[in-house]
Image (cartoon, rainbow, N blue to C red; front, side):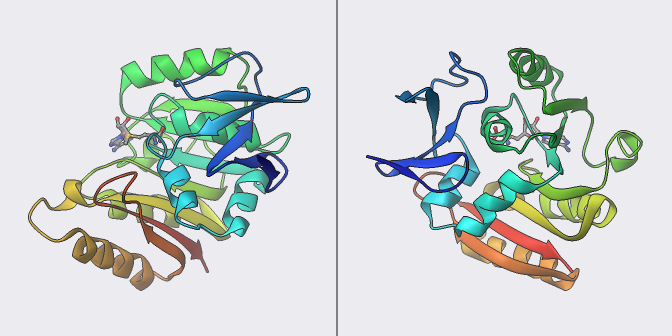
Length: 224
Ligand SMILES: C[S@@+](CC[C@H](N)C(=O)[O-])C[C@H]1O[C@@H](n2cnc3c(N)ncnc32)[C@H](O)[C@@H]1O
């Protein structure tokens, strides 16, 4: 029933799960399984877009990348649902800078960090104004973006140009309905992917997130 995929990611039946960094806590109502002295938190694809991408056969190398970076910049970290899994699997000494617009979400995120997730650093800021946090964050190996804005790809690309290291990876969730409610989701996804390509990034993986997230795309691109 349990299959180990990488250092801290397992499969439990069809689902993915992470080895919890903080035992005895369930972050967003996810199921927790015991395995020896470990606790495994199920990574719910309905609550976390990258978990949905994993269900759509995201290659293992992009899970490994989430276990081996030094610095991640996360735009739209919200109250830390997905970030809690990133926090579980990050290597010792890695740091996740989490940018979020909503003060309410930052309060919830701070509570989560206080339970023992000291590898997340919350930043209350608007990702459209990167200069607000440029003095706080380091160059990143991974840029994760999930902000559901009409100009989400442009915001992601400006931040990637400024903060992503050479060969660094951009993980971008595309909410097509924030970009256009009339155009076909696939048309919108293709348009956004073209923008990323034209900017000089190499598309490494792309998928739709249906049925877990309706009308969403998910893209991983590399800065060359
Ligand atoms: C879909 S939710 C993110 C969910 C989260 N990534 C997760 O998986 O746990 C989108 C978040 O982006 C935030 N957001 C939207 N526009 C933003 C911006 N320009 N700068 C920073 N955060 C933004 C919203 O406040 C919201 O919390």
